[in-house]
Length: 470
Image (cartoon, rainbow, N blue to C red; front, side, top):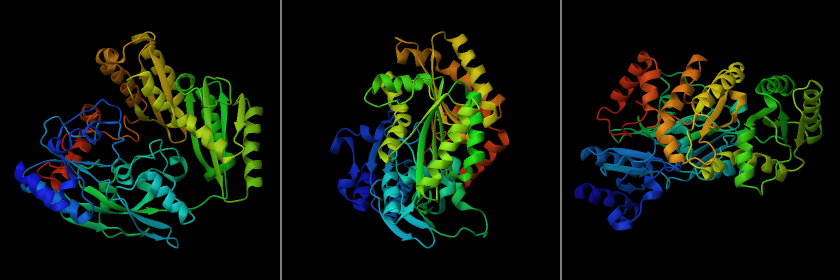
């Protein structure tokens, strides 16, 4: 592959073609965030423009080499790291990190795919506007990766997934051509919606290099609270009451079970937890275009009504931005606490909200019967029906041995129960390499056939992120 590496160095500069021989350890790109997937790349290539991305794709196509696109490498399903063959080029988009244009009147901003999500949020704020996509990994994930996986996050309830926040894309195809679809239009019925084809495709159909994003006015007031409840049924009841009272102003509704916050208390004792431990804790966020006084009155009125109706046992309302950030930090620290506790079996599932209490009751019981002592870390976005239903080994157990022995059986129990409820085994993390078997066995054969036909049409040689999704 010497000829390809020489060509790549000519295209993007020697400093932006990283190999083991020239730069040593490449594990920052070759190992995933969960440390479960570790491959070996032929090279890590870092183009600095769309034209360079296109040229790299053309060069790899000429030499018959597969490409694995990567943003911030924060994915959870093994979709952004190379395999172990040492023959794949890992294409890092992180140098494509500029704001190309901001249009306040149109409420849009065009950014390159390698921009870190937090930087996108800040660029919108600098323009006096809001880009509402928010994830625990927002300090390191990139907007291109968010779109490639159709990321969700904490404000889907109000603003939708990444798909709903994108109006147009720029994409490099498998042939190295550039499709420029960076439209800021909200209405454009001129044929198939190519944008939606590439969003959520995990780099298997094309490489996203830029996007035109929807912006929103900044809310005049934003309020956050924690509330303790005795059951998931009460959480669902509180959600219904909050939607009725707050309407579209309800921007976040997160649930956390006892053990998830216990892990945070164990590994991050410096984080204040203002409420006593309860079976379930709800994190609510309300954003309003009116002033602080009216918004606070409505928000506190909701919590008082919930107390009167027996839906919650206690509540704590943030009195400052710092306190609000602290409450969110509790929620966002759960995955980090899990990582500190050891490897675990993660599930990113979607269910009808109405089905969630019964699903959890039945599935909790089935798992505890199959593996006595297993610990369940259940948290997530109840407002849009997305749970992170994770399984930790029994106290004192060895996590690697636990995964080797029980992961397949745990997945079968959980995914069978999800399927029985009409749910999805992947809500916001994607399929990647981790859930290929679930796709093959649980997805409709008709749907799989259509997906394979699209893949064949857009990437006939199978060079873009092979072994992912289908």
